[in-house]
Length: 414
Image 1 (cartoon, rainbow, N blue to C red):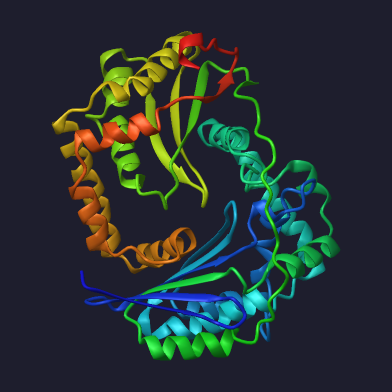
Image 2 (cartoon, rainbow, N blue to C red):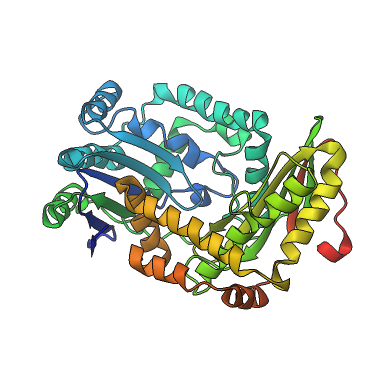
């Protein structure tokens, strides 16, 4: 896949980043607005979650029905959600409909009606999403683990807190949107069959006169407990483990990803083999990499029966802590194959690339092209990953369990 990259920062602080992809007829955009959960007031976590739906319920000259109808008429595949730092708006369509779609989204982001009579319906949807976590313990433990591992406000649950969702007023939502939805710090990532000059002119017309606001500062607060338990009467126990690692911008990022792939990159990985296959301790076990702009974390999950939970925790921790003892060439080769496959599939999707260029710009201030990433994967070796592990050994774990009884963390594995 051949790529061309472009970027422009407008006077109001909005950054447009684009990738022209040859051989595709689609175009997609990812709009990162710095209005995520971290920007909710300290005691009002959930305002961002409540805002992401009603901004589509009428905007600019369109009422709610017309917004939905016009988006559907463009054949958009779209989604939106609240992340830690950003509210993310995504859409993909045929390339000829890109600018008409952006025209609607300019109204959605800048001129939403936020009708007062829709607040109760929006509240009900947000509460349903929160309640759904009770039926999905695997998802719940990830939310709760993040809130304990990352310092506030970066650990704040993106789904919000029940008391806030239940009590937020229309006036509060209108005020919060006016305070946090801003062009300065926002990133619009576009990828696909694009004309850069036409795109830049359209974005300038649609967003160039959007007034910037004062910068909002995020200050690191405290973390949660290192070991914790959520009591739930069930026959299963969910185990969550997190530990710090390098951020996406760090030179060791690809070594960190290689390490996670050795640990949890498929049915030949260490966690799957040692915890699930050899011992039959659990029905699911895996690890994944997560990054904030200033730090990263490896987050691990295991789901098992309550009778085998203690052994599952201990074996999982031992597999993680023994990573610095040695890594085989075959393990690195499998990790490279998996990482390259993901890279190739990402490179063929305008949707994936729009998200990637926006994310890259946020984390790096530039875009990594596919060749750069492939080269970084190609040079991974057992030695390079072990050197990374010596600099950043798995340690100082945050451990959370959800089930009928807490587990004991051996002193030598904390």
